Amino acid sequence: MDAYEVLGPLGKGSFGSVSKIRRKEDGRVLVWKEICYGHMQEREKQLLVNEVNILQKLKHSNIVRYYDRIIDSASYKLYIIMEFCSGGDLSQLIKKCRNDRVYIEEEVIWRTLIQILSALQEIHNRKDGVILHRDIKPGNLFLDENRNIKLGDFGLAKILNINSLYAHTFVGTPYYMSPEQIQEYPYNEKSDVWSVGCLIYEMACLSPPFEATTQAILKSKIQAGRYNPLPPQYSENLTKIISMMINTDQSRRPNVDELLNTNFLAIRVKERKVQQYYSNLKQMEVDLKNREKLLIERERAVLVREQQIAQKEKEIMEKENYSQNRMNIQQQQQQQPQMMVKPVYSAEEERMRSSSENVPFQPYQMKRAYTTPLNFK
Image 1 (cartoon, rainbow, N blue to C red):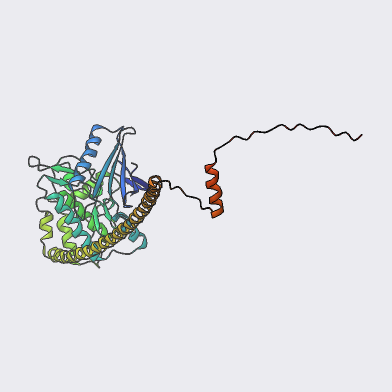
Image 2 (image 1 turned 45 degrees about the horizontal axis):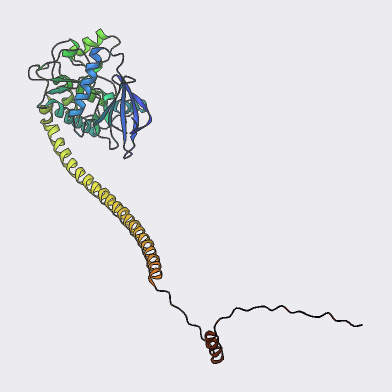
């Protein structure tokens, strides 16, 4: 928890609130989903564990990236740390266009479709088990700073293994549910394709293909599979691809690979790969420049540090030399012999000194003098 700084709330996801955070070690802006699991039922806890397990496995440019998880046992909270998408989500884009009464450009819709299908191709074709998202809707498709699509919120996702090719649980958002889901029939990854078809239709028409005031009416509309045509400014190819995805017959509905191999998508996929290639080259160039800049800064820091160390060593050497010189001087003074200095006398002083040295010493004796008092009479 101490490794992150909370910047503010962003909204709510499945089972929890979402906040914008900053990682202190490098300043990277991320998000965490704060989930209180203390009062959860076992089924909800299992869905939560399921989301974390799925997120850990997925690494794709069109899937929201998972970074870490923190469990706070004292408060019964789990924090799932993920990539931050600064562009919001598709529901916000659709709402803005609807309020402004402007349609989304067809090229933007095609680009969005290819990126969603690319993300689904990753989760539907996994060797360790097919992953169904089961809740594809505009609010779960996020946009990064370059307006790239990121599929997120895997709270309702399910992994199908070899022994379980169909799911049976009734989950998802009703407006985007496939006929087999809403009738509680077995379903597979093609239910996600149906949801994508509904989403792409909504991007073109700014409203879902199936709307109703009650669940029963919505169910009957989805089963019938009838919806209003696209606005006239959109191409026939877009109409065809949507009709292929919103096909009530699951057996005739294409899977992701079949969609990507259609003529009007295959060309765009190739173009996207070329664009992605050059984009990767540019990103590599930026990364190399950033790395070079970082290395230069590190070299400068090392040089400054070396200079500081050299200056410190110089000061220490000077102190050591000064101390050694003082010790040498003291030792020399202690080892030098005491020299007797002979005084210099004049000739007369030398004669008197030598004569005095030859006379034996006689102590001086004081004699008492007796005087007669004077009489002046």
